[in-house]
Length: 173
Image 1 (cartoon, rainbow, N blue to C red):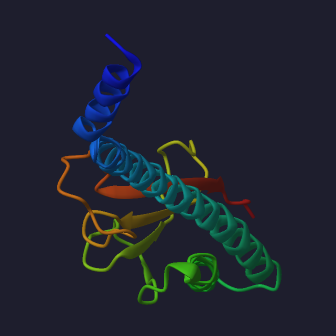
Image 2: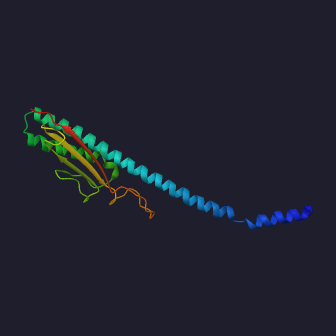
């Protein structure tokens, strides 16, 4: 086998593999883009969950400050609770404004999925607060009904609702 035969075989093998790199690249790119999509999707889920938790924390602090002030100036408990609920609603709207969803309404009922962002305030007694009154704020985001990124038909498990609840004990007398 002379040098010319070797060069012919080498050229033949090179022709046989024409386009193989392109096919390999296409397969690898699809896998990498799918992984990147998954990382971004879950990062947005964690970001939204953290934002909901922070909104509930901020709302509870603001509502507690409003409640304390209203009680200190002689308002009734009912008036102080109404003002605290309004403050909580405003704080949740400010904290979750980046979602660009309809304004949140803090109601006395548990969050439902009628709007993407829900807020519920309640003043339970005897539960985790013992015999004293407390303020409970729940912020929920309906992720299944209004996802931040479109879902791919890959059957990836995403949460349906992101919820955060904060309870603070209200001062007595």
